[in-house]
Image 1 (cartoon, rainbow, N blue to C red):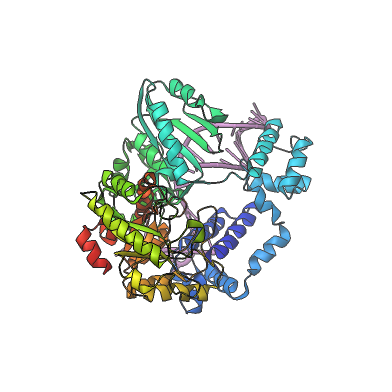
Image 2: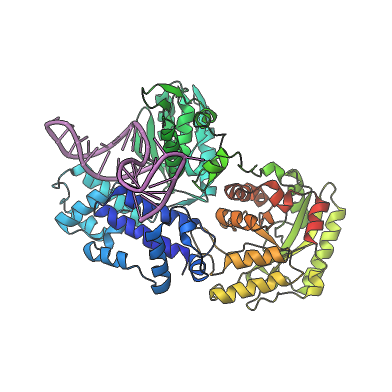
Length: 571
DNA sequence: GCCGTTTTCGGCCCGACTGTTTTCAGTCG
């Protein structure tokens, strides 16, 4: 049983309770629990079976504990089954539609028997929604649009897509006269691995000018709303972008507010309330007389509630407020701390550039070392190398080192971990490499115990330095394979194997919360791009973002070390 | 349903916008 399945059950309970009009705070408890469980590294089923106590997890109390135990034991949750009897499960899907909340979903079901997206669409097309209380023709139109949107399957976007458009829009809007500031906020600013939309904040003397420019952007498909303070557009690829124009004096409060996360904001506001303050997107106010105290910068907002500045990547209500209060915020790693890149591919296998071209680009990025790590033979589609071919390739690397100065090219390989946990190449050739990455590219469907055993066997091989993309997931495309990550991490710690944060924007593997757990267990990390072209070496920033979201400091990451120290660590 | 250096009971963030309304409910972030 995966944690995600347990979290999904709690989310469904929350959705149904919402539709039934239950106590909103009870609903929030379920949603909070679902979020917390989704962030856990440790598998709850294993924890329960090992006699651990889920109630030690914040937001999990007696009732949730009992349900978790029940779900782990029976695969089901009786409370949810009871709820489903009264409210058809199809209704929760309707909640995913833009503009539809619990009240309208209930109304649609009670009055028209709508219990699916299909039926909703038919009812709307037949003009049967406009007669319902609180609905009219416009609502009907909006719902039809939402159905279309839903069908298009446009949900979340990888962070890298956000970068493409945030950058383009900043350049596009930046030269509008009167624009003083532009800041993308939201999950993008928190460097969340996926984003639902893009929020851009601006200070501009004449807001209508920047709004006009914004809604005329070349990639616009629809203008959803256009006003003096807020406009929304949808791009051709489905991404919604909001632009808000704000005042100087409340800019910091707004930036904090629109950066979120929602859970972080709630926690900050609760804290403010206890201090007799009120925090909103307009500033920090004294509660008793609404006197405005501050709000021009984020630093001021944090100071007003007695906290140092909390970096956006940490604002997930994962303990950052307590840490800030105790002066124990981590000194997060920066891109500038990175001294080398320890995974990349060349034309020898499935890369686009030569060894030298990769090294030159890395040198331009300011690195002092790179490891060339082409695939081993098992990865046939990539033209993986056998022992002979790798031996030749290593000679090529030696040669390339003679043709470039100012950067050291390390000899490496990404060797496949075969189904039984043995490696795809003989130890003898692996020993000639400075950097050996072990990774899984096949047989993703093993049972958890078998996969765990397989990977740990590879970790125990003294030739392996780094476990690459440890969970095999592809964001929005492929779930991680089933593996007991905590056991893998412990094995890595015990055998001095480094765990990778793969910076490829489709992977980001380990993910943030898991990297944090690994570090807490004493593991070292490597942040590597897995670049298949010279240009892709620039993706390092995505790995650094992930590390920052995982509370990682430079000292936890071996490719922030000078070459000698890094090599010493690998050996 | 969760939680507690004021509390084991009584709290639980805050405001804008939209569309439908004669004063507001619902949704969203």
